[in-house]
Each structure stands twice: as C-alpha cells, then as structure tokens.
Length: 291
Image 1: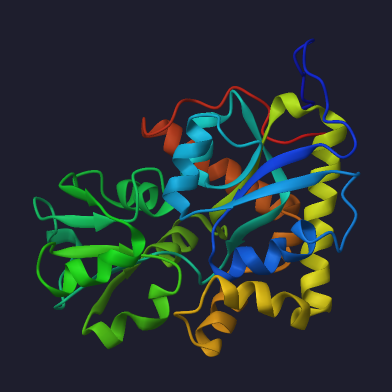
Image 2: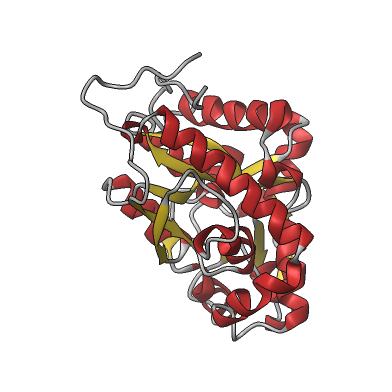
C-alpha cells in the first residue's frame, strides 16, 4: 500500500536539519553514530539529535515534537496518523525480549492484584505484559533503570526489565519469572518487535526514503567499522563496562536493524493487530511503511 501524503506536505530541502531522537543506549548510539557524524550520505540532510530514554522519546513523538525518532512499537500504534515506520534502525529479533523478574520464585499466574513495575506506559514491555495477562492491572510506571531497585526493596512484587538490566538483574538478587520475548515467539513463531524508527509522514516521500537508506548505511558502516563508533557509544554509557556495552549491541542490533524485510514487517503487523484486537491501541488504518 502506498503512502498518500497531504497536498501541503513539502519534503525537506537539502541541508535542512531534522530533529532526530534516539536513546543513549549502546545499540542506538552504535546505529546512529555514522549518520549524525556525516560518515554516510543521507540525501543532503542534517540532524539535530536528542538523546533521551525510550519513554521520554515515546512521549515526545506522541506530542509530535520530533521529525524522526526511535519509539516503542507499542507507541507506534498510537501515532500512525502522523508518523510511519522506517525499515531501518530498529530493534527486533529473537532472544531479546523484556524479562519479568522478582525477589523470589513466583508463578506469573499468581500476580493478579500485586504491584508490577513497568518501564513506561507506552513501552513494548508494557504491551507484552498486558497481552500476556490482561488481569494484571496494578501497574507502576518507573524509569527503566529504577525498576530493579524497586523490586529488590519490595516496593513492587515484580518488574519488567529491559536494556542492560537483562545482563545485571542476578547481581541484584533477582530471579527471572518469565521471558516475555520468548513467550511471544512461542505464541506466534515471529521475532519480537521492540522499537522502530518513526518519521513524520509530512516530510515527503523523497526525504523518507533518503532517511531509510541513510540509516541503513549507518548500520552497515557501524558493523564494518565498529571502532569508529566506540567513542560515541562510551560517551553515553560511561556507567557500563565494555563487556556489557558489547553484549547490549550484540543482543539488539542485527540484520533486522538494516532492513525489516518480509519477516520483520510481518512481526510488526502482527503485534499491532493483536494490540488493536485487545483494545490497547487504535485499529491501524494508515499505511505502515513508505513505498
């Protein structure tokens, strides 16, 4: 299905600067380093980057304040009237989903009525938990980096963790109750879509295609010349060890980050369809991708 742009939409001109949002996490700085530093061509476009945690980016996009942004696929379902999905730059894969953790071994089926911490209302982690068990309604939304502490001190009975917390939760004395990504894969056979790159529809087809290609080139450049991205990655992840940074990139950046492809697109569409069927997002009625 092709994208029909409003008549008053004007593509960005050469040398225009687009507001570009992504997280300071190693996977995103790895992906965008070459793009924002002009190491790969992108149709003459320039960027004013804004690095924020994923839920802040979700809310900025929800308010229409960014031209291009990494967003959770959950949030994407709420903004498709104004944004579409680019095929490059996202996080989608197998064995990389959010984890439900607790201080003690608990049966996830016995969590109804107990407080569960989530890393933001519009995160895919929140969506997956709601799809897994709609009866879990006592939800507490915290910045992702505060969830493990809240679980460890008993403020909440359990929490859904993302990002580098996957590699460190055991050191906080926490136990894994459920791998929500694994649950999704077993239920659907598809990889789990975590976050993608949303771009404003009114940028125009030429700009949208240039963005899609430029981000794909940036991913390819990072894979080909990983040492070039290292200073940018480390500047935004000083609290992480090199080993955790590398593990983070290895988990969340893969072939789907260069191009969703048929398999990735099918996974995204299924996630959005299931979220809409559950009444969590509006029924998608706009074209998902630029053609």
